[in-house]
Image 1 (tube, rainbow, N blue to C red):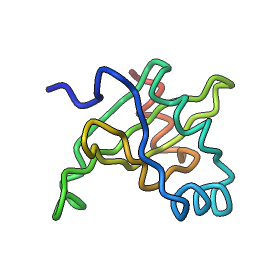
Image 2: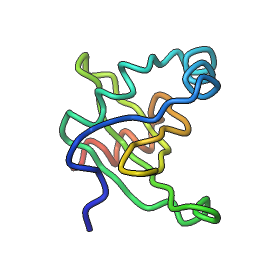
Image 3: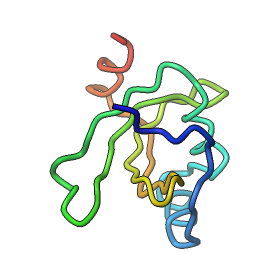
Image 4: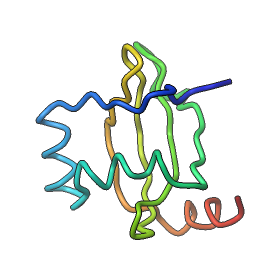
Length: 97
């Protein structure tokens, strides 16, 4: 199943981009970099897919910062809901792929 659109475009709202910067010190640029680096591990987020399909991802930035993302796809645009540094358990998962 293909999840990521062919052309990477992002749908940002000011609230989420500022929230992720203030709360988790992750910039919009770092968030977008995750989708262009490998490995990128994506899974469906069944628990939070009530009104729309959501996904979870583990990836890394150009500076090798490993991040966890929650996102959805709206009109072929990636809308990041939340992003933060990965924890120990997620690091083990990421490093085995």
